[in-house]
Image 1 (cartoon, helix red, strand yellow):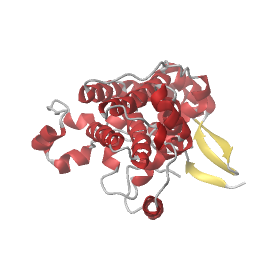
Image 2 (cartoon, rainbow, N blue to C red; image 1 turned 180 degrees about the horizontal axis):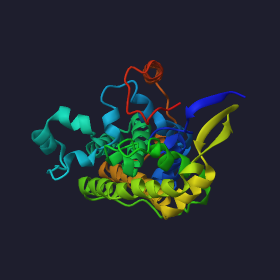
Image 3 (tube, rainbow, N blue to C red; image 1 turned 90 degrees about the vertical axis):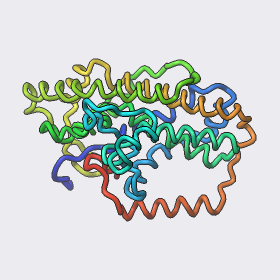
Image 4 (cartoon, helix red, strand yellow; image 1 turned 45 degrees about the vertical axis):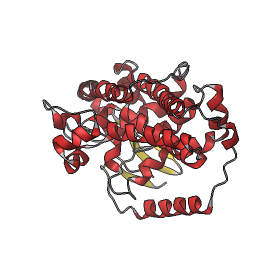
Length: 314
């Protein structure tokens, strides 16, 4: 059997392809009936397209910065919530260098609102899927720090361990009965509260794994067979111990992600005047739309841009 040398994770981006898809899928069932029919009709598209922003990081200049914000780079400095004010303080190049996730979230909600206003089903679906992805990223603590993969603390691979390995092992045990979508009156404040809350968990994510490794480091890795290949990965026993000391953190963040996605979809729809979506169910994809998707796929395969090392979707 072929042995893959080195550490290989199931998925290496965002919540992992599995996590992002599950977040988008479950968010649909929190929507009001006026929206749910349209979203359920296109459930497969919204679920599968949840990973498109990660693929675009290889094809679109500037896309990678939309997935994170290195809060520690601004330690002790004023960081404006409004994009125009942030630009005036730091300039676009500096902001891009440390990530623009919260501002990108606001822009994406605005674009989705406009898509609802113009009743453009293609844009509604694509932007809904994209928004779900970015919201998911905002709930991952390691998307808010320059130590995004534990590389500064000798914990390479921590990113995928927390956001991919643990959810894929324990997702079926998570309680995802969350409630229903609600309107968000102050979008910017809401988004920044999410960012700050995620960032407040970074120390726990890092230090708890460090302490665990000191005691159980000899048992951290094991081998599993996937798709006909044997791969080295974090052992199930070590993952169980880390999941336990995190005390429900991963489940809470996934629940919050799902709820927030539904809330922001709903908010964009309400702000657009609550248009009737029933007539938009049957989407006739234009040849231009299909051609654009083919081009995006080719660009992704070419991988003209190299994002952060922990993010490498297969």
